[in-house]
Amino acid sequence: MQDENEIVPQDVPQNSVAALALWNPDAIASWSLLFTPVFGSYFVMKNWQSIGDTEKARTAQNWLFISILMVVVSVIPVIGGLIYLIYLIIWYYACNRKQIKFVKKTWENTYPHKAWLGKPLLFGLVIHIVLLLYLVLLNSVAALCSH
Image 1 (cartoon, helix red, strand yellow):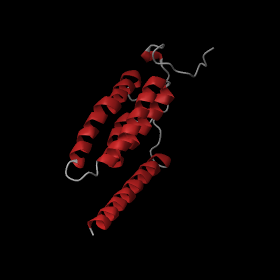
Image 2 (cartoon, one colour):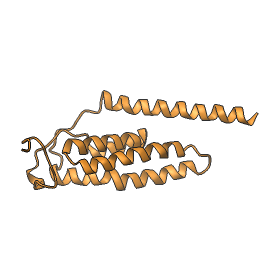
Image 3 (tube, one colour):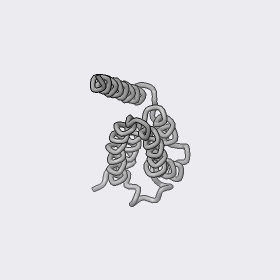
Image 4 (spheres, one colour):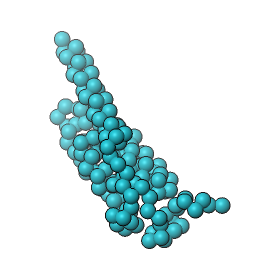
């Protein structure tokens, strides 16, 4: 027996799906420019979980793991930044854009928006701090190796 609050997008006509509280997928893309696709992939995954689409949530989780790897790769001198920029564009179209289209088609802008202040932006700040510590560690190791 299915709970009346459970939403399975594949089984329910989109216009009859009740609006859920979600993080705005357009804002996810914008915040990901600052906080990396690691941040964005996490919130895309959480939105798909809220919607009830486990397959798309699992795909977003894969993007999360790939994003972590790409942040690590992005510090490679000379080509790392270019690789990261290309990845950011691919991530947007392959992961985030699909959710933007789904949410707009299903609810337009009538769904309740989850607040960004608090835990979500704190999570992004933690990602930034970890990345900065990683860069400091790499520079320290490089300096030690060059002597």
